[in-house]
Image (cartoon, rainbow, N blue to C red; front, side):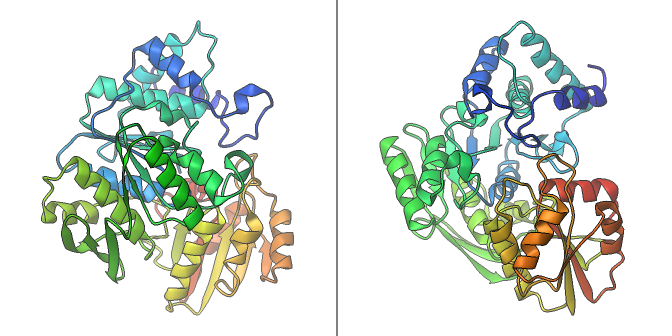
Length: 425
């Protein structure tokens, strides 16, 4: 491959369960065997130095971004996240920056050629994670942050060994795969806890917490829990104090929402377990530099427009709480698209009394709810709603007067498409 465009075309030719429903057969079930096979064929490492492995229902992306920023103070940090908003380059980054086209071309070519005669066929997600392992070997990075894609136990990233596990908030999502209860989902996500290693968890619902504790005990892992071994308190909007083995005040982050205190707390506790030499000032500086698009992000050029990748009831609840606390606007309009496998009814329920008008549309993926289906759900919830054309709605949202807030939310794919259509927004 000689250009990143060729890389993108190759990746897009692979099975991608992020945008397609299961195709039928055993390949649809989450499993580790394909990545194990690729790692053997390409002689890739499964033990990475200072590796923090993150699972959870909400907060994974924010926690990964904070952890990367902290570790990058003293280390070269390779991070793996998903899905991406605009470019696959967002998935594998060095110290929060894109890798070169040349590195992507070399690595993906090596994976394609190395697996050419294998019976193992990698998916899009598996290929990008194998590329991450290839980059770790190629670049010799000294610290690593890995976000799971789905669940934990059988997520492709769980081939990693001797990792420090981080569990963000567990809630009901992907119930058709992970289970229909907090306990079942927590048990699956706790599968990332490794024998004899450490695990850090935010405070969980009781049923979920029990499964986390049981998993840690079974793996003889040292478990640290928010509100027991560490905690974070919001002092004022986007400013926090941390209490753990150390006390650190005046931590400012550019990410909105009081809920970020949980992600900040678990990120800092886990990172300090791997690098206790970080000074208070280095920690404050690192958090100030955290960058993550699409998490209750207010646009620089349109301060009355927010974009948020909330896509399940738990994350919609967090968005609603933040909107209620902001009294600046006389009216709110939310442009929403969602995936068919998400609980749209419970998600949209959180917007009752929070937004004045709902504009529903489709997302640019086969998994999208139709706009008409979302309209029916919203009408049943008695939310003032209309169907809109996605492309036209982007311009309308950006043209709202200053006293009206526009929110683009409900899906990574909607927010990503919005940013692609209006990169300077």
